Image (cartoon, rainbow, N blue to C red; front, side, top):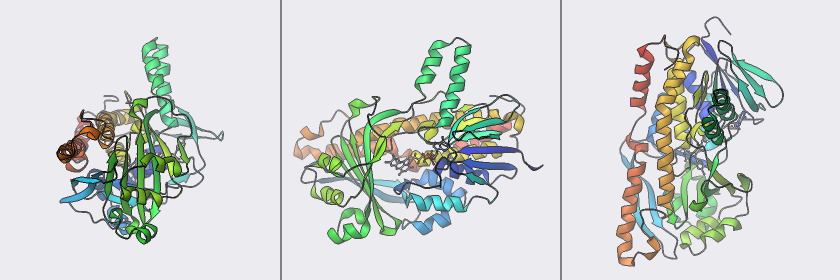
Length: 451
Ligand SMILES: Cc1cc2nc3c(=O)[nH]c(=O)nc-3n(C[C@H](O)[C@H](O)[C@H](O)COP(=O)(O)OP(=O)(O)OC[C@H]3O[C@@H](n4cnc5c(N)ncnc54)[C@H](O)[C@@H]3O)c2cc1C
């Protein structure tokens, strides 16, 4: 460490959360950063991603906007725009019933393009260690944190940020520390409750993700709606979201199949695996023709059994903090998981980079992050789950398949208004009030080592 280094941060996980954290920390001199990633090479899933205006504001603040705009046809705007059109599609004749208007566009990308831009913004001094799977860590007051990797090697750091996703090893260790403490103090119920939070739980929903080449869809169905218009096709217990990315090169398609009654049960089988498209095309039999023609063009879909992290009582411990999916993986029905990871990253950099944060009070700064971000993320988890119920006609006590035809449109419009209300925080609110709150807390009494 050079003499002007304030502290050394290790980021475990080089996904969107980890890389945005590194970019955000690079704005603060004196913080050394190393990234540890289990994959032998940093890669992103070849799928689409959409960001609403709230995380997009962070992207802008980090100076990433100009380069990212080279990879999308979507132009940022602050005004009201059409985000998605909604159809009830689980019948031979679909019904268009709602247009979702948002403040600012959903900014859509091919994930590898997004990652490329993040990597290009990392300072040359930041080291990325690939093929490093963290097994666990340990920390003792007044000593650096020791990181233990599966290959038997070790490393040290002053701050550990767990951006290692759904199956986070950092979360396992962090909750393990809390369990150990509870057991020492003979708080057996607390120990059992904390242990139950370590493993993610299945949401009862599976997502089938694929990219359809734009040219293929265009040649077979030149006027297919999703070539130009982001669309959600809703039905009982399932829905499909589709939108163009990479300037029309692909259409991102995600088909969801939900068995809500199985939420919390164990998922048998691989959580992420390629499947034959017949596995899910069958599930959409009887849906309107434009859905079937889109699904026909899908090749090699990946099935994701959607798992979530149960709400944690804390995302920090001493000099360690969790962010993104490691802290609060959620169902993707508000397109907010990566956005939340981006906000976490920005807030972590704000508290760690603040001039009052020193080696002596790192845990205080991380507590401020936890105090502000955790309740917010829990609310996002609840809201995303609700959207999943709305999109699959499993809510509002309306049996949509029994509504008379002459009343259907008005009931569906009501549904549209309800899910908009539940979702509009994504484009009507800003991270700024949370940043101001953090800055106020940081300024209060930096000599305090804990909140
Ligand atoms: C179908 C679907 C659609 C989605 N669409 C959207 C969307 O449109 N918009 C949106 O905002 N979000 C969306 N999301 C959610 C979003 O993909 C995630 O929330 C986001 O990618 C989480 O980022 P992360 O960096 O926290 O975790 P990850 O992307 O999972 O990254 C974790 C990284 O850590 C590495 N790692 C794991 N374990 C270890 C270890 N032990 N040691 C070292 N490294 C490790 C992994 O290899 C990986 O690189 C969607 C999710 C799904 C399932």
